[in-house]
Image (cartoon, rainbow, N blue to C red; front, top):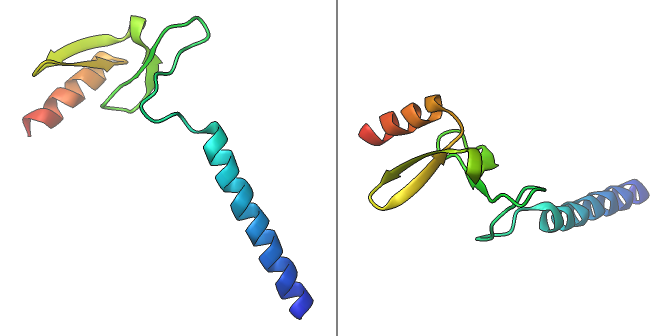
Length: 84
C-alpha cells in the first residue's frame, strides 16, 4: 500500500512540474506583441477575445484608444456592452 501511495505521489508531482514547464514555454509573453508568419502584428478582439492580424481588423476609436475587431457583429456587441 505504501509503495502504491509513493508511486501516486511521484506521478502527480512529475505531472504538476511538467505542466508548469509547458505553461512557461508555450504561453504568450506578457506585454509582448505577437506576429503572424508574414510579420503582421496580432491584435485581440475585445468582444470575442480572438487574435487576428492587425491589417485585416476592423477598427473603432474611443477615448483615444483604438479597438480592433474581427467582425461587425463583434463591433456591435462591444458597443452594446459599453452602453450598459
